[in-house]
Image (cartoon, rainbow, N blue to C red; front, side, top):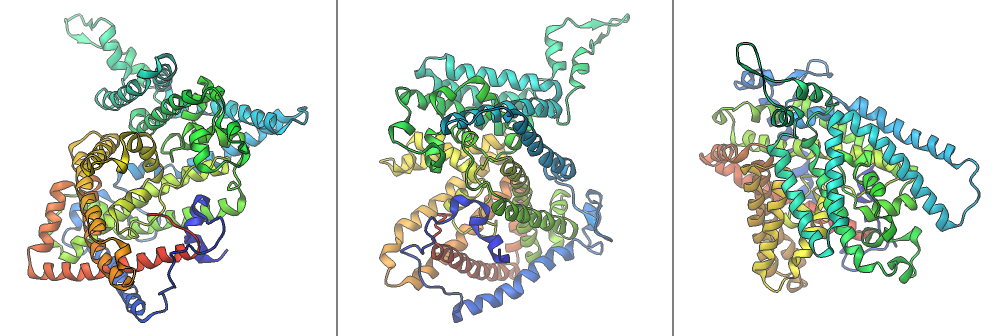
Length: 590
């Protein structure tokens, strides 16, 4: 494999690979070797260096603001450098990478040992019988390992999780069919709020409600200590509710898949369509990959608690999980898994270098005096904050997907584009947390009517519902609600521009259309940066400080103009990168 092949989308996920390898009909000739793009190369050879240097300069001890964020830095493993380990979310992952790497290796090895022992003395079976045996073995191992895994993670709180899972299963299987959808959504949305407000239902709080208060000789109340004693066995991650939101998505997915399966109970669509169960398309695996008899509580538990994907995903629906348990996909091969692992290691090293040399997160957390930074430095602090957010999500997602691939299950890739390789608000959400996006489309957007609604107002309202749910799912706070609604607002210019300037009317002027699209892309990129800085980095007040620091002076406004020109150049390179994918027969739509 060539070095550049590592950075093809097909290396990330075989779902994107062309079946024929032939160029798409609308793929234009390459523009890489044209005078226009030689000018763009000059930008790329100079400006990225200045971007890194601007944040490196404000991260030096000599900078006036260094004393404000110095306390957030730790000793790093690179000689002479501190490390910005101030992001609590990524710190929890980073500090435990060695232990998780051991589990990643140990878990598949234990499975292979179990399967070897279980296969002894088993006679040759028909293809269908062999697939069913493989399913049962995988479910047995997944359920056994998951029991150990969640007990180690959450201690006695694993009982709370199992209780929630049982209640959700009863909603799907015990209620009349017409009530299942409403009850499922009500239960799981209420669960998001209850988990947050009740703090994970600590046993100390429960016993305080149940047991009568005890008093000392002086008459003062004292706690019995039973609840605190039980809570002390909380495992490695006592606050189980923090990471439970991803499980909620699987709970909803199972119930809805089960509900929809009731409409085809009379016969299996796989048999009706005369499909090969071992060679189903991804669409068929997702929609009809499980037989009616597969929706058992045992299979449900194994799916919900599947260890490699339990903590962060990517999200795989029940049908796809069962189908892959029966039949291993062709993508589960050493030739595909090794390049994927190499890309993960490259991303991990990149993150380490960024955290050791660019202290953007620590600066943003230290309530800085924005007036001590130039407009260029302010914009780059915001830009690298977004890049660190992208990396801190990408690395855990790819780590756990790699674990799943090594274990024989191929979930969708979550991050298919670099953060800096996005120019459309709509396309951005197709490629960022992609498995979540696909979940939203299947379980919320399409059932609501999607973009095919008769009214454009209805389509926008559907988007508002989607992003309100997305914001609440991430965390129940006003900042993320503002982020969700900003995204809906920022989608509108993208949609209106496509309606006002349809590509088919510019067939005879492709370059002019590409340049016009580049101007629109600049606006989209600025809106995307603003929305994500509000939601995941500096908040609304922090964004105001950044913007005011940039536009309050003539130099800042001139810089903003130069930044827009640079973004235009970047958009043209993004366009051509996607055209290159089309010439390989790949159409990502993002």
